[in-house]
Image 1 (spheres, rainbow, N blue to C red):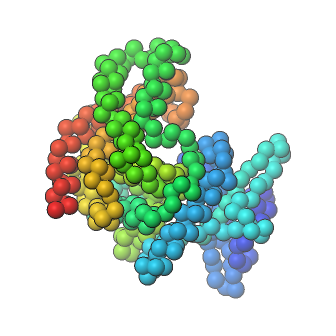
Image 2: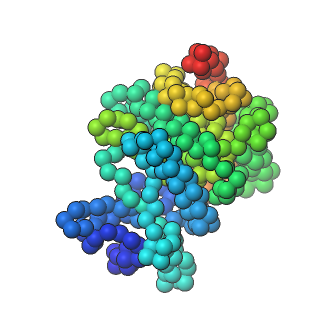
Image 3: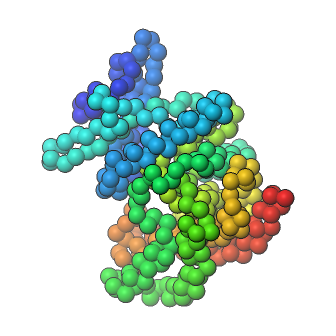
Length: 371
């Protein structure tokens, strides 16, 4: 921890260092909870080492975060909202958003720090809550508020931190290339499913093809899983959206579709029992209710029309990614056993078919909500 102590000393943390605790919840960046004592008051901060293999432009990541969080703070102040919060960047002693550490190999390591938001908790699954329906509603409302607060943000100021992250057509082409390159012969195991995926590409390209035309380019989070919402421990209300590394221009439908796919599906992404893999419609409706309460006045008609499709598209996209990685020999996603990515693919494929069967019901519910 001596190295971390030296890095901590480079930031404007108030008070004397009391403790450093490594937080292992995140999958990408390395995170530490830093506690300082400032005249008898203990204050916590988050210190993170950015994974520069994933985020190759750390300064762009921090520029996006700084612009977006400053805008949200301003909007919350204008609205006299003292309940909701956003990330607050702690500057280095040189007034920078990042501290660059040169390691023993001569490589640059990028560190940043934030205030720790007290009194909150997060959930990996809706089923961890005593009231999953209420939690789904709060999740939808939280990401809806995030979208609403950034509705008037000049999106052209943001850079693309991960290129083509939700480009469905590129994900599809990546699958075709993996089959063509024949790194493995695994594509033969899923010939029927691949033919089915090919038949869906036209419909599943509607959102990306319409982006910037009939679907507006907005500020999007791009990682709207449940545990990126901090919930008040006492009230259960969503307080803050965190993990803003992938904030960049995109479609609101990408965030909504992936939020529902990840939170409201009945199982985790590697469940093997097909009977346990489906979209929980009750939870989906609760999520949509919360989301549309916040966004109904800012979404245009095309965004509304494609809400159900967005859930299908984001599930389709993840199915493509898992299958592509399996065919390529498991080079991207971490696996725990030989057919882990294959099981993940089949999970999303089964979920995709179930979502497809519920599109009409979801569309009817959206219309009912917006009457």
